[in-house]
Image (cartoon, rainbow, N blue to C red; front, side, top):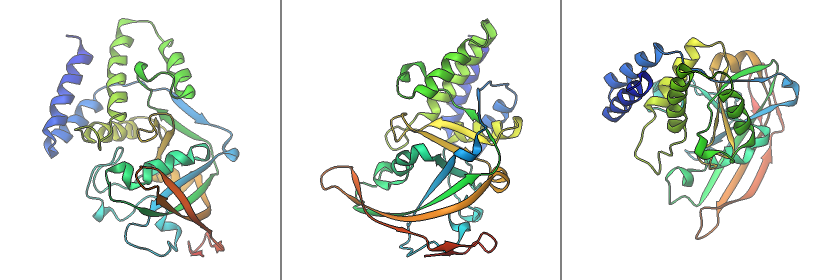
Length: 275
């Protein structure tokens, strides 16, 4: 058995244990690897907008502060793993302006296992970039080729990077991580231990602002972005918000927009949003 497969087997065992000790073990295994990922640079930052959806889970009428729409800072209440975050860790999940439909699919709770949902309300925060971003890119598996041309092109280029036995072993590990990022927890018996540990490994080891990966909820055709809080604070500026309501089409999992409301104004100094 080559070294990469040995590591993968150990990671699978630890993931299935699903304990605090196994998660710490996963993190330490990953810290001792050098896992290659292609980097995606957003240089023409003035032309890119990022959007982030927040569902009105508790019947909120409006979110009246920018702090309510950015990454979570109530770390005492973040009690579960997310795809890229640990418990107690706020992180900025978002989409670029070309993937707004992906953001809706990721946010509507019926796609996240809530079969009883009939109507959902979101506030969509929008941010402009003030500086370039550099993102690590989770490559798709070969079997998912054809779903996202941008990812296909990057994988093809990356596979030509080096022709060696060592690189082939590394790609086995890269493909295992891609598989973990493509699992739908609402449909498969899985957890976020591997993806969260890898995100934190990548954050500590590489000088990047976040990760770019294919959306599971959008059948890997759309893309998601996750940014570190410090990159949000230093490279993003809030510029708009919109409240939208969606209603379920009876008998299907489709949702239709039934209402939309724009902000009247906002103050970047105080963070106050006026509706």
